[in-house]
Image 1: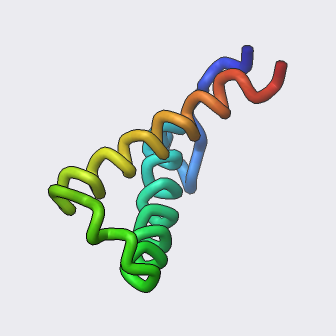
Image 2: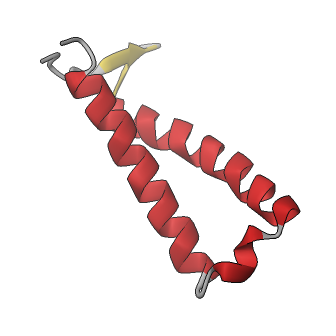
Length: 71
């Protein structure tokens, strides 16, 4: 297991979870556009809830991949 430590960005310590959240936000925006173009969203009941859950799941997967990726 790799310990999650703060990252120093120009003298400011940033949590790795915040960086994972930013990456997940960018990827979820891309995925949302892709789902709009393929018209898969017509199967989604509540679009805002689906987008939020997608962001949370992607963030959790990135954090877990940082935590357990080294083994």
